Amino acid sequence: MFAIIVGLAIGFGVPLQTSINSRLRDAFGSPFVSSFLSFLIGTIFLAIVTVATGASLGVSGAILTQQPTWLWLGGVFGVIYLTSNILLFPKLGSVQTVIFPVLGQILMGLLIDNFGWFRARVQALSAVRGIGAVLVVIGVLVTVALPGYLARRADKLGENDRLHGRPEASLWFWRLWGIFSGMLSASQTAINGDLGLVLHSAVKAALISFLIGTVLLALIVIGQHPHLTYRESVPVHRWWMWLGGVIGAFFVLGNAYLAPTIGIGPAVVIVLIGLMTGSLLVDQFGWLGAKHNPITGLQILGLLVMVGGVVLIRLV
Image 1: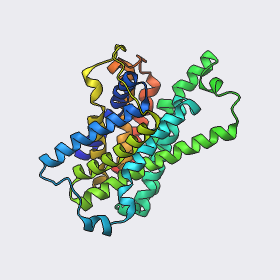
Image 2: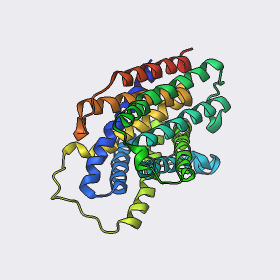
Image 3: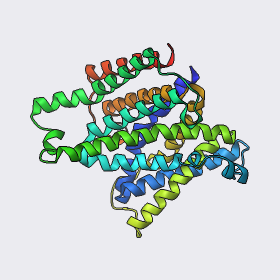
Image 4: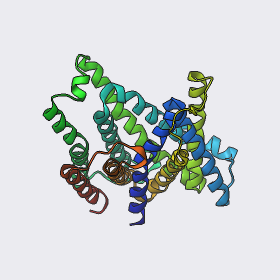
C-alpha cells in the first residue's frame, strides 16, 4: 500500500513540475535552460539528502568497472525523454504528445517485467495483467484524447487542422518516436531501481541520474545559449518557480524505490494514474498559473477505467 501511495504522489507532482518549469522558462526564454536549472536544483537537493542519510557522494572504482554500462544510462534516457516531449509538441500537438509516450511507457514496463530486463524482478505477462494494461491504455485515451476529439468535432478545428498538409509518413515518424521516448522513460525507472540496489541507496541512485542529466543539459545550453540573462522585466517571478527540480528529484527517487519493490510495469501504471489525476486537477483549479479547464465526467470515467487496470496488473 505504501508503494502505491508513493507512486501516486510522485506522478501527481509531474504536472505541478511542468507548470513550475513553464514559469521558469518564461523568465529565461528557453525550455532547455529551464530544464537545466530544474535538473541542477534537483541535483543539489539530492546531494544534500544523500549526505544527510550518511551515504558518500562518490562511487567506488570497482562498481564503475564491474557493473554493466547500461547502469549509468538512466540520466541520459531522462534527458532524451524530456527533449523528445519538447520536439513532439509542435509536430503532433498536445494530445498526441501525451498519448504516444504513455503507450511506450506501458509497453516497455510490461516487457521489462516479463523478461527481467535490466535485472528487474520477473513478473510474467499473464492474461489478467494484459487485460489490465489494455484498460489502462483505454483509460488514457478516454481521459486525454476523447474529450479533445469531441471538442474538435464540435468546433470543426483543432490539432488535426493545424497538422493539415504535413505528410502522414512524417507524422508517423514522430508518433513512433514518441512511443520510443516513452519506452526510454520506463527503462530509466528500471535502471535507476537496479542502480539503487547496487549502491544500497535509492537516494544516491537518483543523485547520479540527475547529475548525468544535468551535465548533458549543461552542454546543450552552452551550445545553444552561450549568453543568458534573466528577464527581470517579465512579471513572472514567483518563489515557487525554483521548486521544479525538487519535485523532479522526488520523482526519480520514488521511481528508484518503486522499481525493485513492486516491479516496473506496476510502477509505470501507478505513477501514470497519479500523473493524470494531477493534470486534471491543475486544469480544474488553474494551479500555479495554469489555464483553467474544468474537469468533465468523461475524464473522471477514464480515471476509473485506469484504476481498474492498475488493480488487475498490481493486485490480481
